[in-house]
Image 1: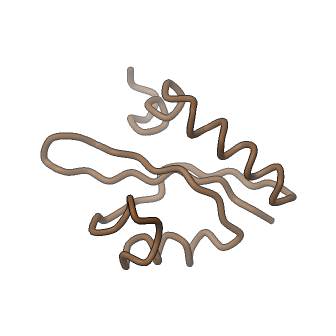
Image 2: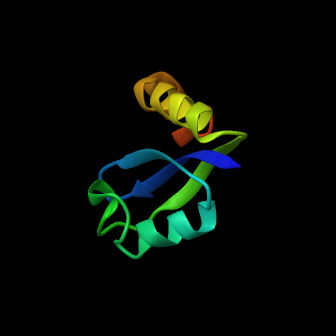
Image 3: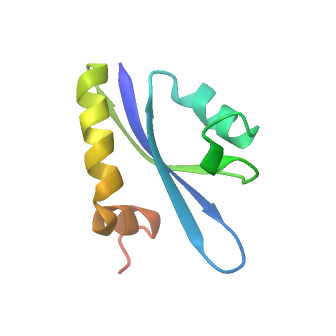
Length: 83
């Protein structure tokens, strides 16, 4: 099983998001929060806002790419459907 996930981090001025995929979502979130994840995520505290399960890595990678490029959907997820 693979997961596509969206993390959010808030600071005083704005809310930012990060999209990724993994086969162990708990471990990956902990890595991001311990500054051991992707370079972009280091130094911030992240919360899991969304995830979806896929059967294969290949499908998960394709769906991750789609979510990364779909800024309208990311914004909708980030702010809980309020636009």
